[in-house]
Every structure is written in structure tokens, then in C-alpha cells.
Image (cartoon, rainbow, N blue to C red; front, side, top):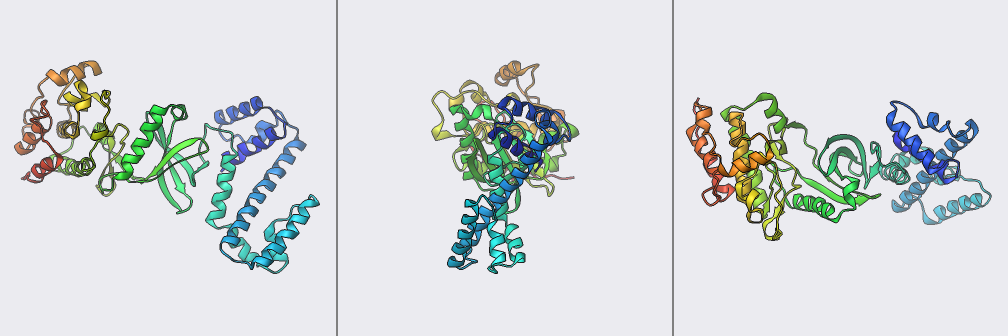
Length: 417
């Protein structure tokens, strides 16, 4: 919670015209560059000890007022106190304020025998009150760089997991349910651009339509304090792309199991007329119990809503010929191709199409003939090799036409030791 305390004091100093916006910005810059430095130390460059002490007292009073407001709302909602007693105590508080004396409502309730101190202590620990105070302090926070400890939409950000092309994913605590989630926030530089904003919400919307054991589940989409976000299931495990990089390749049994799981998730995606368009090992995560989850629908689209002039987007090695040359015609068969490339890579440690750079790879995808899996791995099951060949054939009309047919053939593979 240090960041909240930090910038809230800076905000108080700014509101009272004790420091300028430029000075506050400089303080925040120093904090971001320093390890373990506290705001009190930084502010002393601009403030006297007396003024700083006054701000610290003011901050404590502000937090107490926030708690008091939330406390009053809570006991009213829960009907813990007869309405006439509550109004009587509220009137005492109001008269005290007229005399420039602040008395928390709970103190008045205790002193008049309406509530016991132990009852008040339990209420102040209620998650609704803690959430209100945290979020109110976060909304007051002028800092936009360090998000750790900030509360957005009822989620307290704990730590960063990963950073992608359009946003950052954090571990966050959903305060209402007291559960940890993955929390994706759109980069601020994209929030003002309609194209990227639409893409972000399309990803969230398409993900929310889906519900399958082999897909990451979306919980909630929203915006708060100028940030656009969505929360999703947090998956503890290892990224398949990272593991493949470390181990080189997998044995037949594990490779088949993982591809069947990915295929089931992909079959579910396709049943909603959605094309993922970025199927690859690094978009698979394997949980500790062996369950594979497909992630990242950032490039996904529904075929009936595809624009007439679709752009060529994706990861070169996994892009089908039609996705490169006629992206507006690309459909679920492009995902089947990408899954086939992933399968080839997992079993052989190689890509079916090679090239020295992205431009050459994209050119070779149309022209280069892949080396058969069994030539690279002579012990490979011939049925699996044939399935991969059909998944990555260049002509999409000769490729598998749907994931159900792929899964039927994969489930029919008999591996003998």
C-alpha cells in the first residue's frame, strides 16, 4: 500500500498549493528510480518538517473520514441500527462539524450505547469498507506509472505477470470475492485510439462468449479512472512456448495429449464462428495438473464480421498461405494450419517452413515443401505424421475442413511402445 500513501500525501500538498505539479512530478520520478525511498524523504526537499507533519495528520484524517462514510453506508444498508437512533447520532456529528470538530460516527454510536466497540471493530474490517477506502484513495492518486497497490474497479493490483503488444497483465485481488485473478490493462497510449480500444474490447467480448476447460475464462470487463481492463482466470503453470524452447521437443505421447487438448479448445472457439488467428505454443499454458489452456484472443475475429479488407497479422511461422495472401478469406482452417505447425514443432523441434527473416518465411510458406515428420523422426507414428501433413497442406481446400475431423483422427492414433 506504500504507493497509495505516497502519492496521496503528494496530492494533499498539491491541493494546498504547497508544491507545484512539476515538483510533484519530480518527486514521483525520484520514487520510481529509488529503491526503498519514502515520500517523506523526497518531499522534504520542498517542505519543512512542520508542514510535512501537518500533511501526515491531514492524510490520516482523510482516511478516517472515508472509513466513517463507508461505515455509515454499511450500517444503514445492513439495518444494524434503528433509523431514529442513527439520525440522532448523525445530527450530533453534524453539529460538531459546524464547530470545526470532527468526531467519527462510530465513536458517537459507541458513546451513546448504540453499538459496542467490538461490533464497530468488526464492521470496520468488512470487505465493503476496505474496498471503498482503497478505491477512493486510488482515484485520488495522480501517479500513472506504478500501478502496484492501486485499486481499479474493485481489483487491487498485486504484481505484474507479463507485458504484451497492447497491454500488461497483472495478478490482482478481487476484493469483493477475495480471489486472485489475472488482470489485463490496456496501455494508456492505445486508450485514446479507437482502433486499439475496439480491438481490446473485441478480445474481451469474444473471450467472454467462450466456456471450455481448455480455454482461459474471462470474468469481467470494465473501465475505471481512465484505465480499460478485463479480469480473467489466473492459470498457474508453464508457458508451452517457453518449455519447448528449453526442452527442444516432446515425446509422441505427451505431444499427442497436448495437441488433442488444444484441439478441443479450438473446436469450441470455432463453434462460435470465431477464428483465433494466432495459434502457437506460446499462446498455450500448461497447468500444474497437465491441463492445457489456450490464451490471447487479441487477433481473433468472427468470420461473419470480418472486414472486406482484412489485414495480414500473426506470427510468420504459423501463418497459413491464405492468411498471408488473402486474409479476408481466412477462416477456421487457418487455425488448423497453425495447430499443425505447432504439432510439427513439438514433435521434431523444427519448423516445417524455414527462412532467414520474416519476409523470407512468408515467401517460403507459399513455395517451400516441408520435410516429412518421419524423415526428421524415423520412430514417429506414421498416422500422426499423416495427420500433420493434412493439417499443414498449403491448399486450404485439401486441408482438414473442421477441428472435429482433426480430433477424430487424433483420437484414433494408436501409440505402441
